[in-house]
Length: 122
Image 1 (cartoon, rainbow, N blue to C red):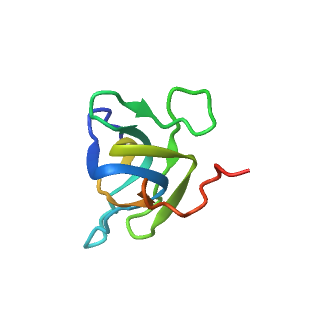
Image 2 (cartoon, rainbow, N blue to C red; image 1 turned 90 degrees about the horizontal axis):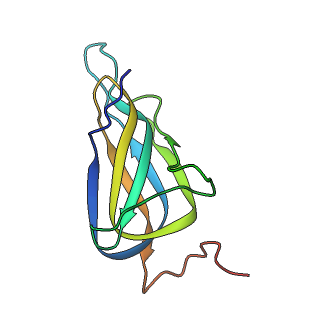
């Protein structure tokens, strides 16, 4: 296990998007070696790449630390409550197994066509 505070991956969604979740997966190793995956991570988001916000959830901490994967093959889904609005999404590993390896799916919808209830209704 290790940590690397300098690694991150950034996604440009091309337009403002309302995100309500993220799915992550690592990579399987071959020949009996240990898998590669991210065990814990944080998320940051921005509309313009200049002003960034760390995802906090309902916490008062500077950043919410997500529980990631426990192996390289299973998909781990994390929900964002409250959801976030961003065009640029940055995932930063906090704890990794061997080396960082990541497959991810951001769950959400275009701001102008979102019909999924995201907890903003009364």
